[in-house]
Image (cartoon, rainbow, N blue to C red; front, side):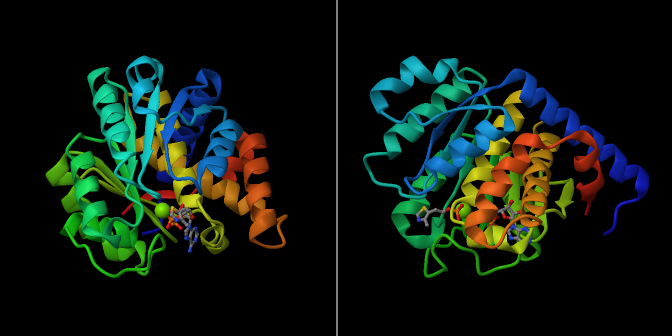
Length: 276
Ligand SMILES: Nc1ncnc2c1ncn2[C@@H]1O[C@H](COP(=O)(O)OP(=O)(O)O)[C@@H](O)[C@H]1O
Ligand SMILES: Cc1ncsc1CCOP(=O)(O)O
Ligand SMILES: [Mg+2]
């Protein structure tokens, strides 16, 4: 549904303010993530103005996690050895009232992964962000053949699954895709930013999940709006980067550069967030 000019301006201004809060506060974000995404995730957080720390040893969680502003947990290269760290960090974040985000990468790939994800969801993430196939699988408890870490569904196919997951688990759910969907179980918002070539760079989904962690850590009173804002900022950076890129490899660099230099008027002229 196209947004009215007033609605568009309100969302744009809000999203820009949330980015300013992130830049001025420079939140410390702990990421327990897959080996593929560590570099892009850390560079995305730095370009946005946050401070990333990829710290995942179980022995370090009690010392380190109480001091972070936000936490990002991503099961992309999950092994039984990593799961206890993820759970301990999630428990510590909840105990110290720090927001945290779960990225259920390839959740349907195996019963082990689905079970691990369900256990993490029970630890009450502030936000779950996945692609459409992942949110459909997590919401429906489906484990079976899918397209690995990539999606073979459109985000719009997962609106009802996302709402149901948000309602039953009491969390915010974000489904990325051509239109990013954000829901708390009742309200549903769409972000119409980004370019299709973002799917041709590995770990862009992981990176935007980390960016959501930084946005909600910097705007703790408004996790729903901050989640939509993070997706819009990342999408706009992708659009600006695409105007200079020749393909996925240069887009990756130009997206990071665009995120770093993003200014208010450029952002406001590109942002497209609306109620669905
Ligand atoms: N067709 C598309 N058009 C515009 N942006 C897209 C498209 N597909 C994905 N994106 C953007 O790429 C980023 C990664 O999303 P996605 O590819 O769905 O995640 P994942 O890598 O976890 O599968 C998100 O910011 C999303 O908005
Ligand atoms: C390719 C791959 N394999 C395991 S994790 C991973 C990265 C997935 O990144 P994204 O979910 O952002 O596409
Ligand atoms: Mg992903």
